[in-house]
Image 1 (cartoon, rainbow, N blue to C red):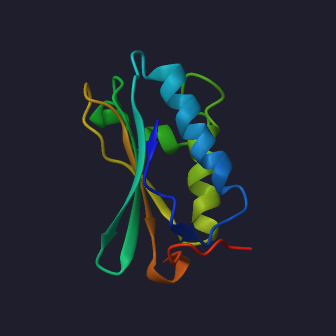
Image 2: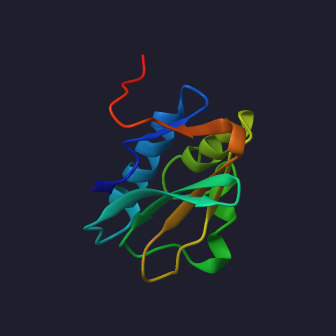
Image 3: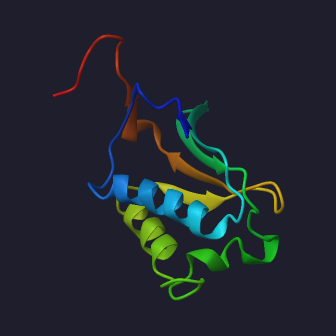
Length: 125
């Protein structure tokens, strides 16, 4: 697992860490041959894009929106549905943009007023 999020702070629902855990759990359960998982951030315009990627089997194009529907999926069908709903409370948007056969890529679009970068050496309280 790799991450470049050490200096990123996100204003989000307190359940945000559980959303990240759900993505990891889904990769391990359904990715078939996942060996690498990466979290990274990319500034795009005024927004921040948080990317979650793995190198598993990925999600077919025909299922990219269905996976966010309540009850859809191989387990409870609630994980990604609830994740998207929880993110929406603080105006964050989740999408799946990966390539089937090469892995998943979930992006979370974080508006400009919902994130900041820590200054080096400063530890938040």
